Length: 239
Image (cartoon, rainbow, N blue to C red; front, side, top):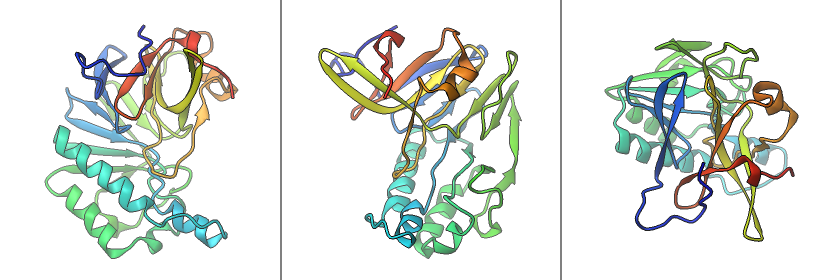
């Protein structure tokens, strides 16, 4: 398993192959996952309009998280040109987020949906999504022997792509420590990083992940500033 966090010029680290249940996927440095065999692009936990929700509570951040997140999604769609997009839950930060979306941002969503199947998987933050966002809404999606759902399901025989936990890795190497979003997977399950601009992350050494992966031979891919890199478990550190 590799240990590189700085990209050598002779290699391309913009994406990495992850095999789940025998199915090859491509993890992108944007935080998206592309499934070539099904032409599906998966993104998780966008939490659109989190900035406006924080503003209502008195925490003022630049109100551009939705636009930043949708812009990154648009660039990723241009790269992979998927036939289907699956948004894996918590696409909206709360039940009122759609009311706070600017009309320009809604128009961006509609343009991204044009010519492809768009599926919203419901999450704990957005159990109901408004019809004017387009696409279709499902509690989970079964495709090609895998279940795509928001919350990870415990169990030895689960074949799943999930979200919800916002995995992040704290990595120690050469005397410095880096904490970044990451993909984590074993032979049967993959948990995706949060795609949203204002989303935080839960350390993958937290008990929430131990309950899913236990002592299994899980693998980790950390999203750096210029690419995505496999990291040895021995380099992981708790918060």
